[in-house]
Structures are given as structure tokens and as C-alpha cells.
Image 1: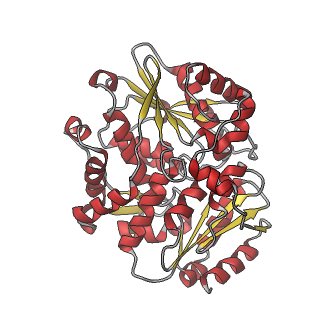
Image 2: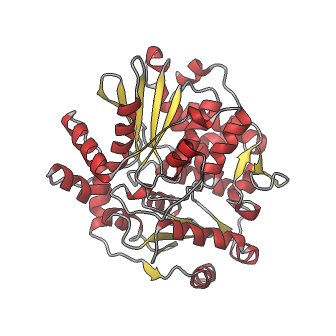
Amino acid sequence: MKLYNIKENDQQVSFAQAVRQGLGRNQGLFFPDSLPVFEDVDKLLSEDFVTRSTRILSELIGDELSAEQVNAMVDAAFQFPAPIKQVKDGTYALELFHGPTLAFKDFGGRFMAQSLAAVSDGGKITILTATSGDTGAAVAHAFYGMDNIDVVILYPKGKISPLQEKLFCTLGKNIHTVAIDGDFDACQALVKQAFDDEALRKEIGLNSANSINISRLMAQICYYFEAVSQLSEAERENLVVSVPSGNFGNLTAGLLAKAMGLPIKRFIAATNVNDTVPRYLQSGQWQPKPTIATTSNAMDVSQPNNWPRIEELCKTKGWSLDMLGKGAVTDEQSAHAVKELNQLNYLCEPHGAIAYRVLSEQLQEGETGLFLCTAHPAKFKEVVDDILSIDMGLPAPLAKHAQMELLSSEMDDDFSELKSLLRNVANQ
């Protein structure tokens, strides 16, 4: 597999290099120089999740890893389902929260851990990542206890749900969590600064587990195929997929799946009031505003990292950005959507509800709609309980961690402080 740096096209790397490095020069994202296109999609969709995903990822990775290696990686990473549930006639929810940390990030986080183990040269690795909620838990649990790997996770202090925080800030060992006095974009900027420091990068073996790491995105491609496999052939004909979007990795993966032959008519980018992309698609002007805290905090992102990959894919495929649906939803509107779904006997949290609302507004007659549910409702218990006037029970993983002590440190939005912390962690 060959990939190139979107910002500096002359930098070309293998899959192994991309997984180990995370980012290219000048904070450039790596992008495949070619994508396999599956002509026998119906046959592919008839296979089971692990078998199909092994084939998809083997075709992407090429001869760097054997099919047997990839199968073992997939089998270890995807040990939970991605079912679709019918909400009403012609509308389905894709449930991506059946993994150990109850969020879609489990797919990418666990496959990245397997990928890094497969291509590692045995040297010390320090993973630095920023999270607006779910990435932190998925990455922490995927890498917990792994030899020669330390994980440092930055998150915005007071801006993720208490249960999200408990799920990844209570582990200890090789997992180090830091509450930053700032928003998610500030955390993300600190990560980028660290990657720009070439001496630091080499000194501590720096890597990232955000969706900027190509292995994370590759794993996410697979559950789009899994979702479509559960629909009837007639329903696949005019399928519209609505994606709750913050950092835009999930939508990137969906568009990559479409480019590889998956029959999806169109995608909708659904955001909260942090609506940089919907406004850009409307006006052609990229004008990020200060990030606003919302009840859908995992989408509180004003400068989405993965957007350049979407533009690059559209450029290489000759697609117009006009093909993307778009919509921004307020907290009040997302609460109304949670209530509407509850009346349909489907319990949902604000992120999935945002995708549902925009899908409902834009789905046309004769189309089948699919919206992504990226987290278990209990991860946002306080918000959902308040909206629906209920007292939701906690699933076992959350109940366990809710009783545990937070182990996070706190830090100003200051790169020199982060640099010192990273060196201390690497030298322990």
C-alpha cells in the first residue's frame, strides 16, 4: 500500500510507515495513491463481517501483510457486531456501540492497536491523541497493558460527559490522561505542535491514534459494508446515509467505502452548531468560529482534521462537493429528535439524534435512510435522562468505571508543559 502526504505529495510512505508516523511533514494527512474497486459487491456483501473485512483490508494494505496476518488482526479487533435496527418504514439506525467502550471508536482503536503491533520494530512508542469524548476510551482500552507503548490522551477539561471521562481516565498503567484548560480544538492543536517537533517525535517514538491515523479510517470502512449487507437488495438501490460529524473521520470512511464500490446513493454531513463544514458547503468560504459547547460534545469541533481527506477524495474521483447533503442542528432540535425517536420506541443519544433529524428532513420518496448511532445512550446518561425524564440504567462497562477514581492530571493550554510531560512518560 502506497500513501502520499496531501500537503507535500512528494512524501510517499508504506502502510507500515503511515501507521507508525500518523502524520506527514507539515502536519499533512496520508492518503492512498489508489483504491481497490470491488466489482463483485453483492458476493462481498454475502460474506460474514470478519471474512469480508479481511478481504477489504487485505486489498487496501496489499502485500505488506499476508491475508492470514490481516485476518488475525481483524478477528482480534472486530469481536462485536454492528447491527442495524429499523426505526420506522424506510429508516434504519446503524448501531456502532456494541464494543467494550460502547462507541464506534472501538472499531478503529482496536484495529489500529493490532496494526501497530504488526508493523512495530519493537522500539518504544508514545501515542499522543486528543479526544472530544469517545476516542479516548476506545484508544485507552485498545492499548491498555501493551508492552513498550505509552498512551497520552488530552481532553478538554469539563467539556466531556462525566461517564465518558470515567471510562478512560480510571485505567492507569500505561494510559496517561490529561485534562486541558481549553476546548477540543486546543487539544488537537497541541497534538499537532508535538508532531511538528521532529526532535521530540524521534526522541519518544511519537504516534497518534486520532482518525488522522490511516489504520483507524480503514477499519471504519468495514462497518459501512456491514450495514449495507443487512439491507435487502431493493433497499440498497437508493440508500442515503446520514453521519453525525465532528472531526469528519466517519464521513471520510463512508466516502472511501463508496469509492470502493459500495452502493450508497449519497451522504449527509450532520453537525451540531459547530457548523464549519455546512457553512463551507453553502458559501465556499472556510471560516471556523470559536467552538461552542453542546450536548453532543463529541462533535464540538470547529476545525475538523479529516476534511482535507474528503476534498482530496472528491478531487481524485472527480466528485463535486455538492453531492454531500448537510445540516446543522441546535441542542433544542437534537433534544426534540431524541424525544421523537423515543416515541418510535428507539432510545438514542444526541449525536445519533442529530443524524436522524437531518436525514428525516432530507430523505426523499423511494429512498432508504440509514443514520449512524455512534455511542450507547448511557454514555450521555445525564443529557438523555433530562430530555426524557427517565433514570436510565448503566450497562456493565459504565457501571464498573463509574465507581472508580479519576487518575487524570490537569494542564494549561501550553506546549512546553506538554513536552515535559511527554518526555517524563517516555522515560519512566
